Image (tube, rainbow, N blue to C red; front, side, top):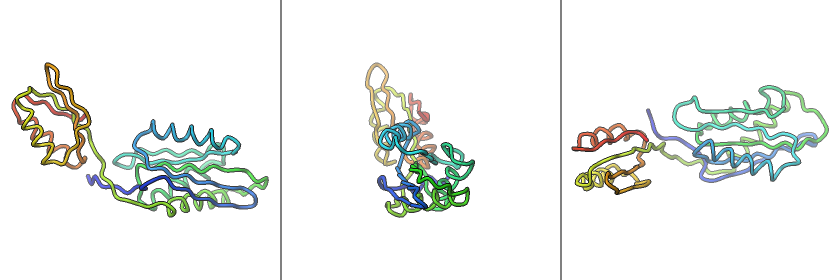
Length: 199
């Protein structure tokens, strides 16, 4: 599976107005669902006067880890159009929240779809799209004499050491591009006394 994906370099914003209603879009590059929850809580605090906080996110490899939420708007009139823009730009590891301040006039489902889609597109276009790689964490348990071989493999595979612990048994968590993880685990497990697996 290809381990390359597109996301935003940093948070960006967009907005759209229609008949008094304001739609403020906030786009964030994200790494985890916990991070998403923290961002949402912050936006709810900051925009507590808004009537709706609709959102969509897509995260991780594969296409199955996504969520949409209409937050009280008519079904499929908000979250789905937001996700549609995420997908049309081919983005992953991204959260987009569109906050609506109601202007007193109902826009109808078509008007809402257009508003949420346009605000989202604006936020994406305002940001800078970059290419990144999905990563996997590998947990390695090994006897101390194997340390040099492990460090050699870390360097050759351009991996990062996330944490290490040299007690009676040595443990290390290393982060590598997802596309290289299987290959690296295979090499490590062929080294005497070493046990490596996805963390």
